Length: 488
Image 1 (tube, rainbow, N blue to C red):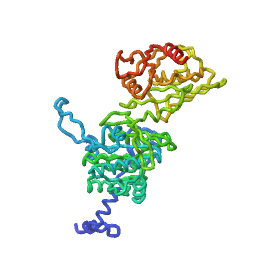
Image 2 (cartoon, helix red, strand yellow; image 1 turned 90 degrees about the vertical axis):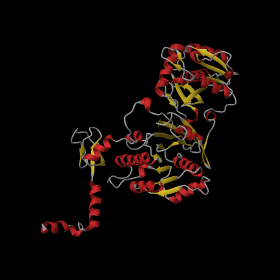
Image 3 (spheres, rainbow, N blue to C red; image 1 turned 60 degrees about the vertical axis):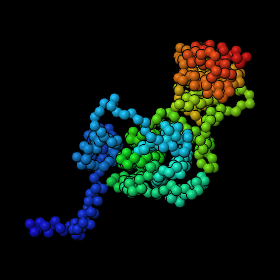
Image 4 (cartoon, one colour; image 1 turned 45 degrees about the vertical axis):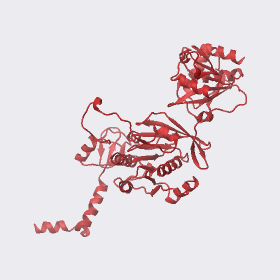
């Protein structure tokens, strides 16, 4: 027995003797507990292989943390939210979550009213679009309102963040800054300082010592986001994760990253333009497809209270190929100018659309030819939504077709003219959702003539539409005939 004890106390270089040696061994054993899991079949392997040994799929093994069987079963059935006893829906008190305004009305609109305690927000966008600028402004406003904040920067030094705050005019800002990319240190700081809102800029720079892969890899992004999400739910700290985007515009990293968080925001806009759009793609605490509009100034991002002015060109007189429509972005009606240019294209005409679905444009041209007698088969057709806005709803069909016809005939639509409505393959003009709100917005901005689907026509003698003459149509040929009369 003594020999056994002596053998156990003698390690390589005596490292096994004493607490320090045990800590060293335990630390390195913890780091080595990784495995590679197949994205296709879920099978695991102790080392990376080009082909999965279980399903024979290539390049599907992703590094992850290997857990003990008991811990794995525990995590498999544990929810990120706090668990409770089984109860019926009727017995649950359905109370609204409390929100903390960020000090920016446009950002609060997209978030559903403000930051939610324990909520996790993921915001992505192109480099230089203004993500860090907006979040630093929001943290400063929250700090001044009495909320404890923390800005964790992994891409810049503290001096660079301070320089940006001076440039934005945030003199004397009391926002706490931590320049760190190691996950364990970030979690320890969050537990020690217990801020109300924390920003991680960015999640692609954070890494965990439990994994050997480089920061920004699929495994690192997934594990770090999961740990930060658990910390937010357990402590009540609202965490905002800044994410990079790929060349295609999607958020970099695994798709599960968007499923983990509560809210996903996309920062859109041209870096050569001063206007920026924030769009909510997912929101567990509010409506999706909400949009916030900002203008980039020397003092940072400022909210735009009347975004319709951005998407309307200022023509002194009506011009051919231009038609204004009312679109809906979440709960907000906005007026957008649709411009069309029709020109001779030869034997291979082009169809190009910016901000609109190109396939739907080809369909509308076919409907225009078949039911309205307007042929563009030998013409180049270019359609653009002014201001860089993207319109995905079919309510833009009627405005697109009227703009194309106006450009082809070379005659402008009447001054103060708007139109909206979906057009079917049979030539019928279908109603658009919430048509009354669209018309009220147009009347408020001074438009005088509207062509809308018959089902969207308001009741007579409605004072909300004073000054707006509304023409209701049922078919596309009826709309074309009416517009010719108005233009002539």
